[in-house]
Image 1 (cartoon, rainbow, N blue to C red):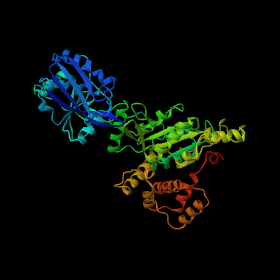
Image 2 (image 1 turned 120 degrees about the horizontal axis):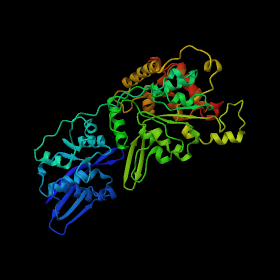
Image 3 (image 1 turned 90 degrees about the vertical axis):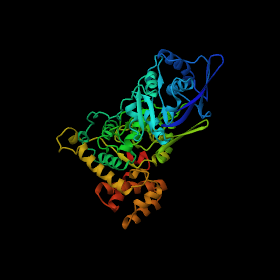
Image 4 (image 1 turned 90 degrees about the horizontal axis):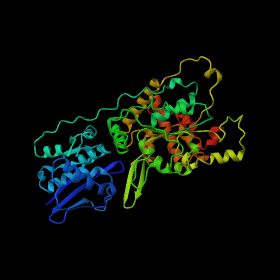
Length: 503
């Protein structure tokens, strides 16, 4: 007898539909799985057999052949256990196969028959809804996460026995409520704690308002990391669609499945590999830049990262996605993130008056950051040590994160209205065509830009990035058009090398 059931396997941060087919016929008892299964999938034979027997169900003493289609796609992970078990029951006549139409299943089995949670339940639910399935059976622990996919009936069950009862109409499934948002996060550090550093705080505000990449250069202890850690406090909360994207990526990575309330802030150590930063592996997993999608990727001590890791960032920062090819598969990981970086002016990190590095040592240190990488950074800001009066004396209270966040949210709202119908949500994500449409220069600003470009101070990419930066500055000021002052401020942050920033 032959039966089939639909399930889904993870591919990157998405899910691919897999059809599980089981054929039961007379012959010597055997259980064979074909369709390019990995070790975890092949081991599911033993889990399925033990789970059925320990749930007082029958495991057919016949020749069983299970096929995972399409056969050319490699299958990995234990998420196929539940589909194999349900398909064996249907092929052996223990459950009505007609009840499996328009139903997909996904989950891992324990030897006792319990259904264990799996990674990527939200990605599976979104793919099932897109494929036209009306019902999805998942582990009970994954049900609230999967229920975030609206328009799909999600059933969360705790054991294979309960699934059999459900298919025989002996038990009704309990209603599943969508996962609630993360609990209110701990209070984020306030921007008011930073003494002085008006230029750096202004650059941070512009970066948050438009999703622009920012590099801060200064000696140790000047406050670069302190300022960067306050970025989450001024970012606007994600919209529901963005929260779904963030939650899906976190679920695939095994970081939880509650609906995201805040934008991600990732700060990997400088020893991270290129694969850990942009993703990859034999079974490709998302890297740090994908985990920071719709949020911030903070690279402290930028010049200490390996050259290979930094150069791997160039294409994702430009295109907004990471394309990884493994064998016959090409996977795409989203990477629309704001890069926030900090580094010292030289290897010793001292202020110029105390620096004892030779010109050769300083040049060698600066060469750790390539020109193409720096060309993808919109703002370069020098962070000098605060003055003694600012650090020790009493000064008027500085502006807090709440006030800055209000301006950032207002600027983002202006961008959303202007970019309605476009695939991007902020100025930093605009391509060349959109930049020329929405960031138009007029009057004296045109001649100013022509002089800068004519002198060789900007590349073609740099020209577009300056326009986007000026557009964000105008949005923060509430202006519909870009003024000369907006362009001048944008050009002031557009420095070509770390050496110029240190100077």
